[in-house]
Length: 179
Ligand code: IMP
Ligand code: MG
Image (tube, rainbow, N blue to C red):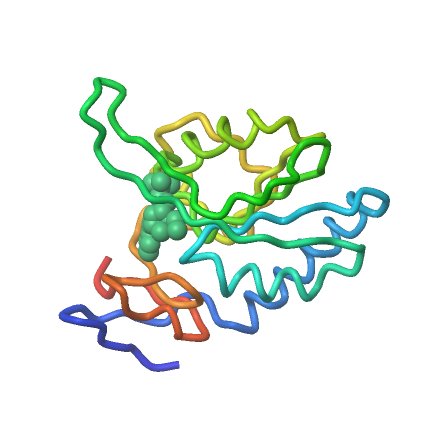
């Protein structure tokens, strides 16, 4: 694997697609065990998680559904600050076993706002799976149930993750050079 340049920055190989697939298989085996009887509904958060979701979902062998949501966040005018709008939330969450799929959890801000909104729909259970997490960057109280890889607080691209719109199509994960 060679370094890549995206926009103005150089990135070096970090986690190979082989290593990702190996880890996804382990995660899927755990999910297949836990959700044997529960016909879970996966909810993947766009854009970043579409590659992770597609690969993980194909390793899930129990009956399962998947749906995708997009979060649009902006600064509200009220003192409550950030508002998250959910686009495309599936109607039938009540009583379902939900597994939220996120590409990377950085500060945790996104999920800290999203999870309570999902809980309002009264799922039977709700767990959170992410491909990557940055424990040193976590600022919000978000409980992660399944993590692919814990990584240091460095910027990464590839495998769905972007740097300013580009890099999502790289099969492997790269990290910013010189970090
Ligand atoms: P959080 O709300 O701070 O946890 O940030 C989560 C979102 O920020 C992720 O879904 C990504 O879209 C983006 N993000 C965080 N860290 C990175 C990174 O290292 N590379 C690319 N995107 C990132
Ligand atoms: Mg994202």
